[in-house]
Length: 190
Image (cartoon, rainbow, N blue to C red; front, side, top):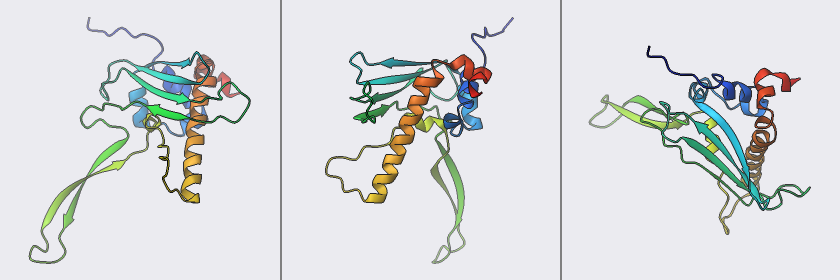
C-alpha cells in the first residue's frame, strides 16, 4: 500500500482564496496546482501594534524549496483610525526549482539575421518574461529611495500599486484567515 496520507481538505486554501474577488483575479490555473500544497495561512500581529506578518505554509512541492512564504507590513499607525501609513513592506524571495517559476517564463525564439554577411542565418535566443501569478504578491512594490525624482504619473502608479497590495494583505488578514471555512464553502460570498 503506497498511499499518501491526505491531511486537511485538498485545495482548501486555493478554493477559499478563489472566492475573494481581490485575490481570485490574481490566481492563475498554474498557481492552483502549486496551491494544492498550501497547508495553512497565518497572521502574526506585532506586539506593539506597528504591523503584521502573513505566513503561507507549504508542504514539499515541485515548484519551490521554501516551506513558508512571508509578507511583512510595518504600519506604525495600524491601530489608529487614520489612513494606514506603510513604513515598509518586505516579502520572501521564492527559491524556484529549475524551470518551475510561476512568476517568469523562459521563451525561446528563433531569429533570422536580416542583413550583412550572415543574412538569413537563424539563431535561437531565450528571453525571460514576466508571467501573471498570485506569487508576485511576495515581491512587494519598491519604495522610492530618498532623493529619487519621481514624476506625478509614476507617483500615482506607485501609490495605486501599494494601495492594491495593502488591500490584498488586509483581505487576507481580516477576512480570509478568520473566515476561511466560510470562504471555502462560499457562505461568506452571500
